[in-house]
Length: 282
Image (cartoon, rainbow, N blue to C red; front, side):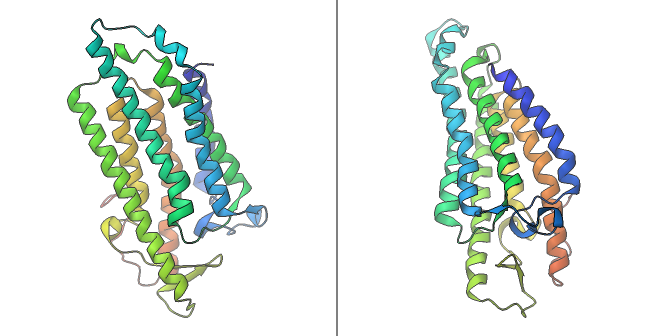
């Protein structure tokens, strides 16, 4: 199969799941077990997190490793130096993908997160399917697509790399604020305290610092910046990277809006000027 085949399946999956996210709370984290429909069928959040996120880098590496023969069919622009530049560009894009998922699949759940709420099996299966299709489409694109026909300008490439780096660092920074808050909240288990809320054996408090001053889910916002930067670095013809970015928006925006509503409902003193995910706008 070609990258375009997996990309078509990814589009069908995202377009099909998006309407569901508008009306159904994804049963994991602070929004778990809020519906009778998802009252049972939960698995370990930490184990599920690691396994479902590992699917993306493993399928990505499989796609690249088992399709190296496509590299010899890619058209050349003539001189070896230009071809080396394009090869290095693809390596940078692959590095962005793998670095993100090294943190997402291993560092965060195994080393940083003090506690992980249970997740419903439907969340696990959906994430596995998305990560499989996304990993295969992007991995195959890097070795199958004739990216040499659409070279990326140096300015666009470096702007994209900078945005990716800022988004990646911002995502980890705001995740760590939540982790630190979880640690301190679990040490001070006082359900009568208006600044502390219990949900599914976990204790939550109002987060502060960084972009939390403006939005409830800055970690999501930074991840959008991260993958938009990756798309810029990949070039306008890199449809799998564009769909990864678009999928992040479609699948995470409803979650961010529901999380913002949860904060406003649970905390009487929640800052009224905070938006859900985009500073000053939404």
